[in-house]
Length: 239
Image 1 (cartoon, one colour):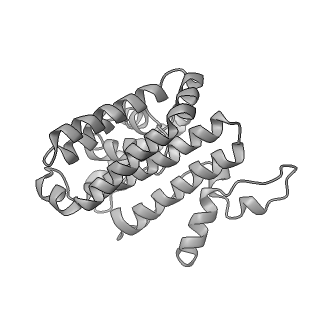
Image 2 (spheres, rainbow, N blue to C red; image 1 turned 180 degrees about the horizontal axis):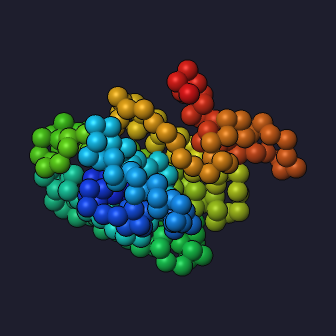
């Protein structure tokens, strides 16, 4: 997930082994011996002239431990301006995270009922951070650029909520469209805002990086537009 990889890069990359880095950043399904070697290598590059920066773009939660402090991240951004609002957002995001790691059927039922309220809350968060970005950056003890990450995360969570909603009503095409568009928007943010001077290598399942998935002949009524199509459209000259 986007936050988990940010957390791991910021807090763990210089003092953890490859297995610990994987545990805090990526889905458990990818936690293999071969991938551990990759993460060990990423850690080893941190003290070289060209370190590899770990950055995530998935709208989904990818790690229980790595996502634990996301609500606190939002809290830290806001508390210098409005402690009550900061606490309410921390509680909102902690509750949303907890439900995502609980019973999946119960989560989908909850999203089906509370989708609009959740979207309103996270939209309000993104708008609040954007409207107060300069003042937050002055008071926030971390890198001022992290305020922009907070805005992107809030918008990314909305794609995740919608992904769950489409799952709850059985529309797999819109489910995948929502997730993959959100991932593409996150990639765009990383390239254009968070790491504008860096080269990027995208590591994802083949399905998500296809350039024309929606054009592939299928028995389904429609193929989802996947992340690779949006990225291909925006960055064709740079691919």
